Length: 403
Image 1: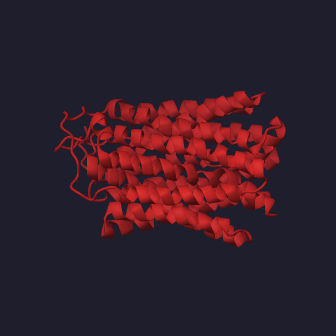
Image 2: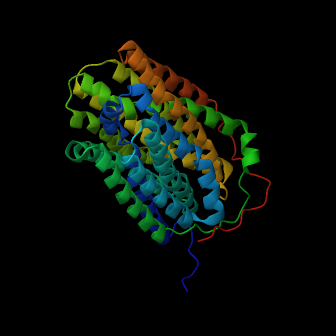
């Protein structure tokens, strides 16, 4: 038998690798939807606002179900959760490739991709966080770079495949490939050692905590704005005369920049403190929308994508460390899962509203201005989170997760 594993051990880095791969495929597929927007809208005869509901339902599903998948990984372990996500992702995109009506595709895509991401994101972030103490920010940062690199690789790949095979076959290829990768990750991942020490905050205690509620509000406001470019930036670029593949690549630029942000801002957080670095990420994301509003050529859009991506990357990497430091790790799956429902609600509102605004006005400027205002409001909200001592719960420790 193998000796019991310890936190900050080499076995933890194997879990990081599995988390990286799972997030690479799941988020890469989810964030490639901008490439599908125009061809699906053309075939179904729908406007941008209606077709954007695919992405809205997906993001609402994966952030909303994060509360359940987070609790599930605390109780049943990551292997079962990942296997469930693999089945959902493959089946959902296979069914979407066969959909004859918009509402059928909406349900199958939203549930399939949404459940797949929900099973790969919150559970794996929580598991990685539990495997590390001294290097937690770095380990989470490396894991979530899978999101950025997956976005960078899959979005332009999807655009190219759509041009060659059509959107239906492309959904089938991505679904089956993603399911295989998630299943392989499930064979590698292991639950973290159960730490000793003060009990983590329970969910009931968390929703009564002022700082937890403020984090929830700030994340929700930012999510309304944050996910609009993932859906509408390619369409805006095409309207400005950019080649469709180059336009889809802008989402990949966001992903690449977010990768740098996850690693760079993790180092910054070690010097400034995780909360202050986290607040800086909100300011960076909020102000980035001013660059989009400036208009101009492709170069300006690339700069916008880079600035937004850096802030977004730090937001994703540092957020779990903020929650772990303040509220404990033994129930981190549930704590993160509930917190991320705010992002689900925000993302579900943002993309369809932006699409409806574009359809109604014929311009992207109202949507961009709204994103700027909401981003700055989110920054103000996160500034109100206190810098006091960590909050610990009073309940009993959770039992070790099943393997």
